Length: 114
Length: 113
Image (cartoon, rainbow over all chains, first blue to last red; front, top):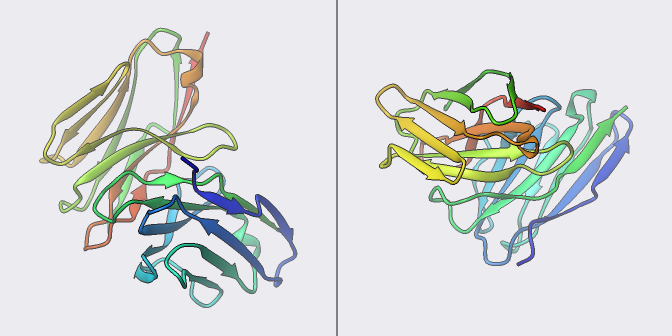
């Protein structure tokens, strides 16, 4: 079974530039999550989708971050404009439903903002 | 929202000894408590989980205990091996109808040969 796919794996940008990350969840998984993991910390939930609807985006900095899952499968996370403190690993994850089932993570997209 | 505290931040044990990592959570509505292992530069991988209707769960050398009254849960690793060296994260559901996990800050487990 294919896992959660993410791209790009690594990205270096200058502050105030924009960046987009793509995620393809495990086939059939209705729930998709984007987490931010800053070095030395645990992952922090940014946004959760159930199919193509947003369930929770309470911790998403909406002035600069946006995410979409238009067809209920793939998702993109965009940052514009980037700040130095956005340097982190952006982890996409998926689960079959939102009812406390196992969450599977992708390898992550490593972002460095200089 | 949910708050998860994890201790210790670093744990060094001799190979073959046991390791215990402890977490507390704040939201009494939380009902799912997974533990993830993350090796350097890798994705977090689920190693064991427990639900609120169970007090203890074991899988070979790994066990998790849950005390709902005290709102804490623990990971126990017995007969530690060098490959157990990694960062371990506990997590809990956020409650409030959404099921995104809230993670602790992690424990760096070091297995000394």
